Image 1: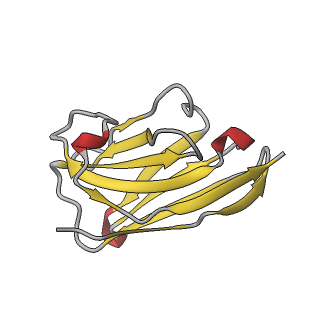
Image 2: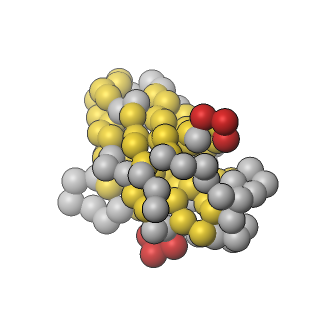
Length: 125
């Protein structure tokens, strides 16, 4: 079992930046991936970033590639999501998640077993 807690959400103007944090209640195993997902009002939850703890490799969909960066601090059991060049379309609740991936990146929700409660990000124009 693992509990995940996100923080860092808030309101920002378009073009601005935010950094989200996700603290884990235990060390993330080297077989696991950490992921960030978001869910906008009336839309499906979508995966936007993943990091494989084993080697630090990352994966992003085209919608955020070049604007968002996922990173990890093993000592702090924390995963970050640095978001830049934000637009109103990035407004959503952002969730972090953890699950075994064995080095194979996937942003399918079914691949993640543990989820945080989410943190809200609002981008105004």
